[in-house]
Image 1: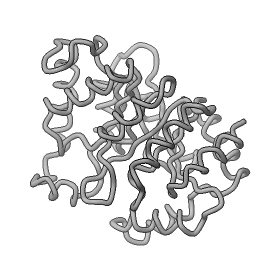
Image 2: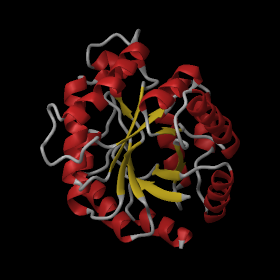
Image 3: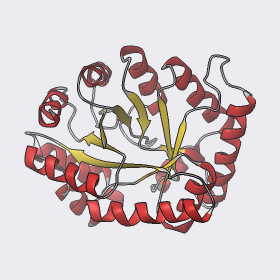
Image 4: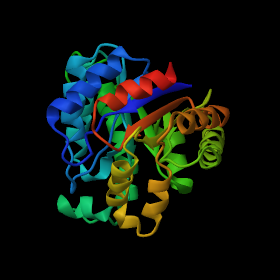
Length: 278
């Protein structure tokens, strides 16, 4: 299983220089990727701006969105942004896409969240067409565009993985929850007649040595879920043992690539996590 580390682009109050420093340190470490979150109505950096900054200071790690909220974006612009980052990074983008669970992000851009599922399916087909036909994308962008992951829950999400994507990205939780979702993604893939198997990505949150600040962030970030936010905060990985056990559980559950997302912005977190992986 490959392991990546998220950048703190969605941790409130993070300075831009710290996002860039995280990327530099991650590229020097044992990580396979750097991950990015996407919010509109929140104190956060736009993921495509952060992707471009990270691409400029890294050479090795993949750039993974965990996830971009596709339906709030114009499809042609999204295709161009993704292809541009893919070209600028030398073909290192893995584009995770999903509906997004927060209606406030839709309202912030003047869109009604109703009907977003149908819009998302249409976008997935259009993105691949744009990349393969090379419409609106830079000439240096690798043919076929970036790898695409689709996230979400339920039958429609897994059907989108099978029809349009290269893999599935899980939204977080214990290894058992990942295993159940992964089995549905694999079944949908087989039912659709796709050869091979989809890539299976997972994610988790961590804060080493700053448990209280990390928990406060998760309570705020997931406040829209009500009491469930406390459960998310309780799942924050805050010790070397917790991280090792979590990694082992996800690897046994069949995860191909796990991205550990930070809940505090101190770049020393990258070095501490690297020591654990080593």
